[in-house]
Structure formats: C-alpha cells, structure tokens
Length: 436
Ligand code: NAD
Image 1: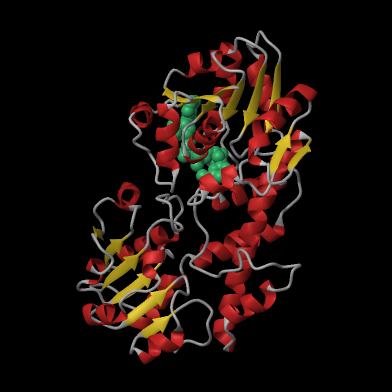
Image 2 (image 1 turned 30 degrees about the vertical axis):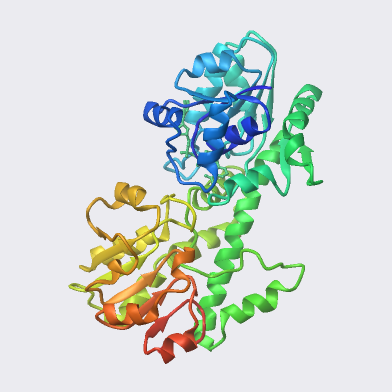
C-alpha cells in the first residue's frame, strides 16, 4: 500500500518505519527540514531502542522515504496518517491547528480516493472537523478513520509491532477493509482489531490514558498515607496487584507522572468534560495529586538537608520522564531542578540519553555530568528521579565516599531501605514506612 505518514515524531516515525517493515511503500513527511535531512542520513531526531536499525533497513530497501514536500507525498499516496502534535492550548484543550492544517493540505493534494487516518490523540468530535477541512478542496472521495496510538516511548517498536489491540474508528466498508489489510501483519498472534464508531475510538484513547494516570495518582496518595502510618506501599502494591480485578501494572508510586501524553491528555479530557457540562471530578483530583507529587522529592531533600538549601549542591540521576527515552516533556526532574535552583541550590545532573533534550529546557543552569558517579562530586545529596537500569545496582561505597553527606532521596524505590540504613545512608523513598 502507498502510505504517507505526516509528522515524523515519536509516533509518526515509529508507525512509518513499522508499516514499511511489513512491506508497504511509506513516505514520512514533515515540515521540519532539519529532522528530514537527518532522517535521510539515518540520523534519528529521537532516542528509541531499535528504531535506528528499522529506519536504516527500510530506507536501504527503498520502502521508506522522507520528505519535506508534504503535498507531493500526499499526491502519491492512498492512505494518509496524520501524526502531528496536539499540544495543550491555554485552556487545556488539545490544540488542533496542526491536525486541521494537515487535513486541509490532504484535501488540496489528494489525487485519488483516500483513507485519512488520525493517529494523533484528538478529542472526541475531531474527525468531523478533519472531514470538513479535507472536504474544502477534495476532488475525490475520502474516508476518515480514527486510529489512536497506544505505543509507549522506550518500547515503541515492540508495542507497535505486537500491540495488545488495535482500535479503529471507521464507518465505511472501504475504510474497514483497508485498515484490516494494513494491520493484519501486526495481529497475527490473535490480538484483536477492535472496530468501533469514530467518536468511541477518539474517546478510548483519552479514557485509557486517564485511567493509567488515575492509577498512578491513586498509588501516590496511598504512598503518602503509608508514610504517615508506617505501612509499606511496596507490600501494599503487591497485595492489591495480585487481585486479578486490579492487576499489577501501573501501581508504582513515584515522583509524579510526566511525558508528552498523560499530563496533556488528562487536561484535554477534563476540558472536554467541562465543555459538555460533565465535570470529571476524579480527573481533577488526579491532576492535583500529580502536581503535588512532583514536589515531594524537593520536600524530602529539605527534610534531609534543612529548610535552607542555598549553597547546597544536589546530584540528580535521571532527567527523562521515564527510562529508555530522551523525552523531557513535563518530566518530574524539571520540576525538582527548578525548585532546587529557586531555593539557591546547585545541581549536577546525569542521564544516559536525555542530556541534549534537557539542555533545551535547562540551558547551562545545571552542570551535566558525563557519568552517574561524576554527578556526585561535591554534592550534599543524591536524588534518583528516573529508574534507568544503570541506577539499579550502583556501587554504594563509591556513592557514600563521594557525596559530602550520605543522603539519598529515591523517587523510584530502587533500593532497600534496610540495606541503605545498614550502609550508613540517610535514605528517603516513596511511601515505605515512617521517615525520621
Ligand atoms: P512530536 O512532537 O514528536 O512529533 C510531531 C511532528 O509533527 C513533528 O516532527 C513536527 O515537525 C511535525 N509537524 C507539525 N506540523 C506539521 C505539518 N503541518 N506537516 C508535517 N509535519 C508537521 O509528537 P509525538 O510525540 O509523535 O505525538 C504526535 C501525536 O501522537 C500527539 O497527538 C500525541 O498525543 C500522540 N501520541 C503520542 C505518543 C507518544 O508516546 N509520544 C503516544 C501515543 C499518541
């Protein structure tokens, strides 16, 4: 099939590469000339395990091409995926200007009957706006489809190649048959393609992310209560996660959720609720809990080092909002670092891959260390914000001898409190009993 994927970010690039891998002719089109120049030379704009190989292999075979000439790419295609950003507008609603601009462009440049697929996360009702934008100048029939994406950054290729399910909002036989053919290679293991009406597909994506964010905020609330009552949230998590009505995933307390999706999608859904006079009170609370949670590590550092942090220097391990990605959007590390800088502290930070992205947010306000141990030099405490594998079994002797004070604030519960205490650390984690 001849496919254009418009927007070559985390979602568009992965989707395009995976469709090419399954034998389609794919053009990745983007307005960002630097990104496209890089991609043509197999230089990826993002860090995503396995993606570079996939892009290189499929470009070499000629099945995957990249261009800034969006108009010609549309003209050459029978299926168009819209995978541009939908950032939050001032009022929290999803800003659809990129999606609708692309829809208009598709209408102007299509040369045959097309299936137009929204992969970007868009509020319920957007497909109608997309159809109107295309229809302004379309000279051929077209079929709008909603195909929300559920990949996780850091495991995106696997998630795309072996999805738990594919959700498709499609309302014509032609659209359903094209999408079934396109996704057949990805669901060979029997995972379902779930067809539904377009509005339900659009809502499914928001409901999924809102549910996941709710689990995180719920556990963070429980963790706070554990700290006051002497209970251990790790054991509580295991205790409830083994109930198959609850399940073990997404029950980890931490420094608050971040990333490009949960914060903006929860906000957008709250906004949709308001517009429809259905206040989503649970999600209001989910957001409020998360905002507070992003400040918990700072509060713990203050408890450990004293109210006045001016003159202190803190080592921060992990900047990306989660491991295996360089995505810094809404990362909890940014909130912590901003608070530390505001309090007059200095920061030495380490991350295995996100430093170049972090620099876009933090400039030279912090020192970026080459290695995790280098980040500890002349620091009064270590704050572990992202659970990269390389932080899981560090050399504690080296940490202790390098830090000025033996203080570790662990936002991911990576280490054993008993072991840390035995090693002579003052160790703070999330929700594991009372803290001194
Ligand atoms: P991104 O910011 O990484 O990429 C968007 C790309 O679109 C950029 O390269 C930008 O240059 C390009 N673009 C913008 N306007 C364009 C235009 N008019 N023509 C061509 N290209 C244009 O965004 P992303 O993280 O890939 O997210 C894209 C969408 O997918 C969002 O709606 C997001 O909510 C959704 N989503 C993201 C994830 C994720 O994990 N990142 C997961 C599921 C869904």
